[in-house]
Length: 313
Image 1 (cartoon, rainbow, N blue to C red):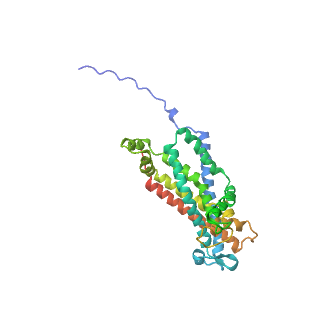
Image 2: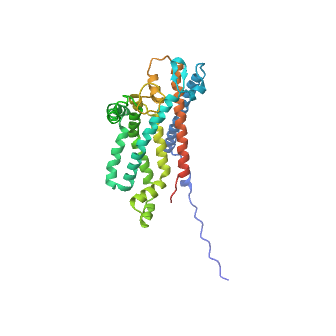
Image 3: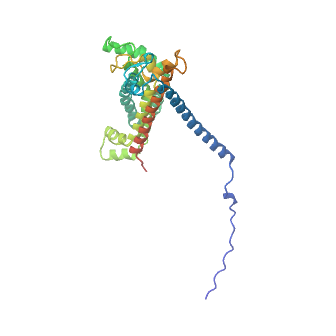
């Protein structure tokens, strides 16, 4: 029987280099990131605390009826009437008009940039589109007052008042076109090119591929862009303050003046009302209502993204 070969001596490997070593730079960066996140959370908590505490003072006042606040159609704090619907209806009407303007224009722009424009053209047009987002909103407000309103008066006649919700809604829609277009274009660009090539391979045209393949595949991102744009339109202040009017008016006529939630908050907060009065505390109740509406919209956006999100390998 042959003798077995002697075993080679084992070599000892030094594993000290693999041990965890303290890295001061990464620890500092991690601490700074934690502090940034904590500041964001604490800021949100502080804002909610201020809104809730001040709104509680408003709703606990004897002049305020919480049922009338949510169902009433008259907002006249001087006589103790606090029905929020004149302000809320104007906000919703302007937001609806804005979305009728922003959705076709923004989504059409996104489809063109993503599916039709050459890379060189896209690189030039997208920054130009995003310039609209950098224009101060007060400029949009005076644009609505000095250009859009006279244009509407020339079309529909003197029934269009100087301050009206139609011109404010159209200009707010122009304001949020870059948001809808940019976010939707990013969602369309994220769709794998293999889906487009497969559609072309079975004879689909570019339009059919864009509308029937690419847009449905990016529907979660587009829906999120729409919800974010609605939140932006609801929270817009300067345009509606300048162009829509400065008095609560429960109306569905877009040619008439009406004050929105944000417009009323801006007007009251800059007035001569005494601190801690019921009129002053009402702006916190309106702010809390806006916060709740925006929170609900964000929750809807997250559910839509989670429901329709497509994951590709």
